Image (cartoon, rainbow, N blue to C red; front, side):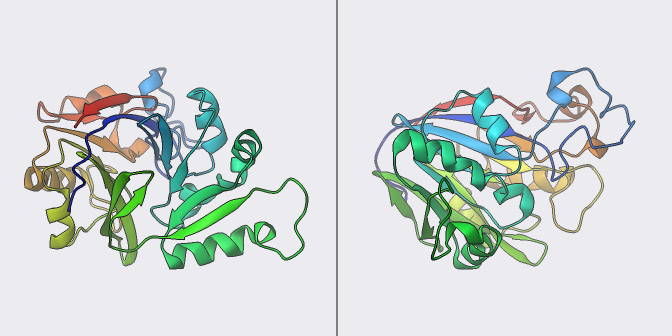
Length: 263
């Protein structure tokens, strides 16, 4: 059940690219060589500004660069969709927030993902800790809503091929990345979203991501007022070309894009 609390959300697309980003190392394709800034895509991540607090969904290898670009000086929590490198390898850079806020940063992830975080960042959880390491406080996500400082976040179970992942809904904004299947119960949780940010890797089918057709079909099912496509591959084409293919209420997301929504 959605919270009855009303709040204003400003969502900032920190990154809208794939696990390799765009441009891709060593690639001479027209998209990777494009001079259009909207074709420069860091790894996918989202910043949500709600009630004066900053929440980030996923912290990939570009996390430091994204925080500097958006001049983020405080961080309430990080919500993790899944454990792949492009979604968690920036967690070491929460050290600056530890120092600025003098406390551990709350990290929300399901149990399986927590085990990966503990393995990859074993020095964080070691009995004898090295000075200056990141300080993380892990919290468990399941299919139930979670409340952080009175703000409700609804996890949405999705699948990245066979890997269970989570999308998230806050108020009337929903964010789905690295997904090619959403069960019916997840779709029901997404219905009523006024803004939907959803992955659309390319035009061709892919084993673990929605392609354009699949993303558009999902948008029709959910019926948001506005939808934004993210996790864009260089194989998809440049920003303007993709936009020319879309319905009037669907937009190609780009890095640094701001979306405001008042519930």
